[in-house]
Length: 152
Image (cartoon, rainbow, N blue to C red; front, side, top):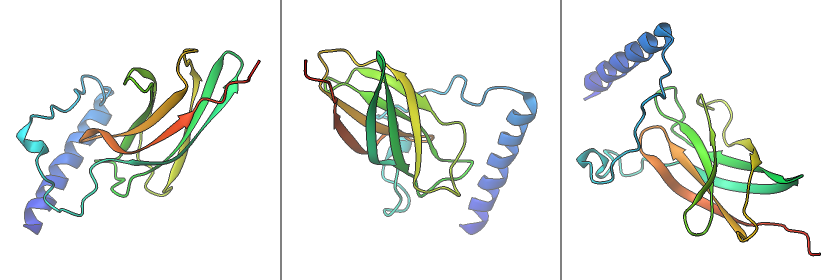
């Protein structure tokens, strides 16, 4: 079993190096995982965490837009698999904005990043912050924030 993992690691590392040397965008054409895909069954290790968890988040008004700061934790952070984005959702599931993360944060756990220029419609009072895993997609613990609108 250990030999198989080393072989898989070597093949994955070689593929990543080839993509990096080619100048191609490794995220181009990345499809969202299909929940009906058999490969998304139970993890090999039941203790494995599939998704990053959003531990904390804050909204700050910046003129007509918002700055969303999110703190994520992803214990599997490696160049092969990491938290590669977080997003803001309206309660009805509408995606309001996404911050793509281009590399792992292995030496910085948990980590905080911001999404600026976020537009939140006036009729949205709550924003849900969700993380995305490079391999499994969106999921994990979320944080719901009340939009701090000034009373006038």
